[in-house]
Length: 160
Image 1 (cartoon, helix red, strand yellow):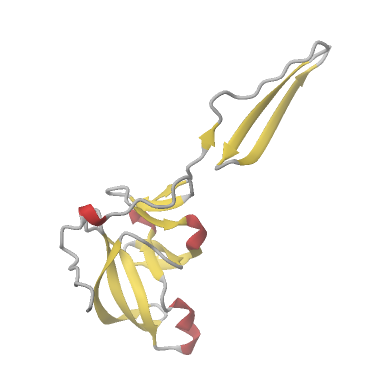
Image 2 (cartoon, helix red, strand yellow; image 1 turned 135 degrees about the horizontal axis):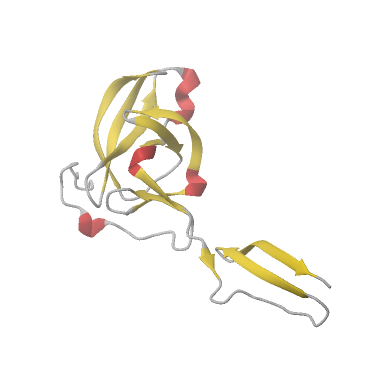
């Protein structure tokens, strides 16, 4: 049995899934639905309909429009526009097929419009910064953590 077809204008807000908790993501700029992990980014050097675009390996919370052959800057490709499941905003397109053998690497990937995305870094700070003091001089440690990975320890020293 085939999955039901979802049109780009269907109300799919209830189908939006929340994934990738505490991971850097790209989200829809209109409704904040998570679209992709930042780790899935392949290239920032692409052009979309409305400006710069990102080539992304995989994405979630997107529904696909109809396939069509579209002349793009690098030749004719078979693509389908993709729409946000949360707000029906057109986010970019999915590459089904490339006619030129030099463009085959795009097949099965997404071109997402940069202006339609919000980069969510999910940086967190510890509840209380760790600050240490010594009797012969004072130094402070400010610890900044990004997703449980220690990123920076900044030491400031004042000595007499």
